[in-house]
Image 1 (cartoon, rainbow, N blue to C red):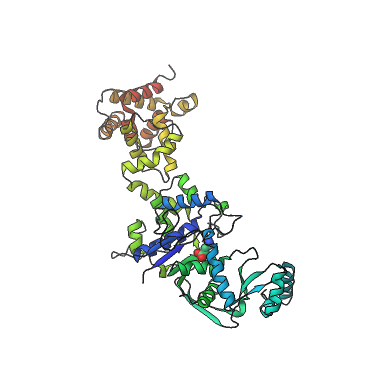
Image 2 (cartoon, rainbow, N blue to C red):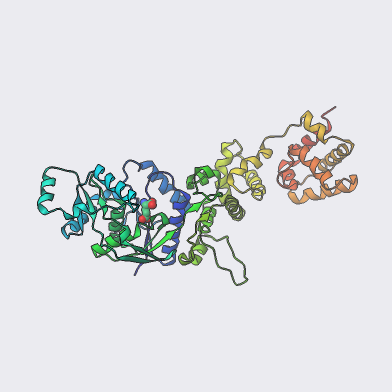
Length: 484
Ligand code: GLU
């Protein structure tokens, strides 16, 4: 049987990290089983679903490289893939359940239901519908319908049976229906509820495995009951844990970025993001050498991912770890790709020279070893673009008899140098050290400050190489002649 999995987000905001991980685990499972990954949009919450969110969702999934085989934009054999285009289907099936006596119309008003609820709570019972309307006679029903009294449709829950299912993450789950009252499958406005629509969709789309957030674990028994009542085959389930922030509370805005879009804007690479998401709740096995390789590209993840070893415990989002993963990917990226990613960030800060692509390549190649996010590029690139101007305050902290000699000696060395390739720089510095006997921090710190005004930055040989002769001479002279 072909594996068919789905990601079924509601387009009510940005794609959250938790949703992205659910999408990823489904995608990996489909790919490793040569199955199909389906994107279905649960947009029946009319008030909260927006066209913009849908666009955003599609763009975030596409950016992550999680391509779907059936769904919006590409269609497929089992469409439509937007729930709002499937409403009639749900009615067809709720009618069927009504006819078979597996569901019934409930005419209870909101006030009546609230009263029941209060009673339950007072008696320290879990609130649960009494089933009152299941006993209405044909005659009573007809009368109420004629009077146009609004109604919901409720599913008749078989009393006191155990519903067990094997969960790929939580292993064995068992719930007694004593906990579940007859629940609403169609609202009084005629719209199917989530629990009903999801079953019809999963069944008609021939979904074999349902992997989703564990906030749905309590919905699963209800859905299994509907699958059974319909005579549909029941998919396998896997419920993924929540993602928590550093402080142990559910990952939210308070922790900073939470959506894929935000991480993209900050300058994380899509492959790094995917790699890190996979490590939220899942961990690769040791290799033959006893080491665990955490940096895994999409192909490696497809090969190694194992839904059955995903932890049921909440995962902690660790920004430092994400930065580390991103750093690994930045280093690995080809110059061409890196330029593509870095360009918009540099351009935005006016740090892009379209006339000197070779120079840009060189600068990016130097900086890439120092940053963890693409958005760090401008901070490091600044010194190459904006010539640093010595000022009184800095001058007085650098200047002494030793740095004076150092600067003069450097000026002499670099005036005589023609080839400014990085390899040619070091011998000059070595020569000056030998001559002046100034070395280590006493050598490099003033040099760095004289050239850039900053205490830290990329490798000094590389900086000098990019600056070239004219700029070097000018900067050294700026210092030497500052007080003259
Ligand atoms: N729209 C639901 C959600 O985003 C889908 C749950 C499911 O996958 O069944 O949580």
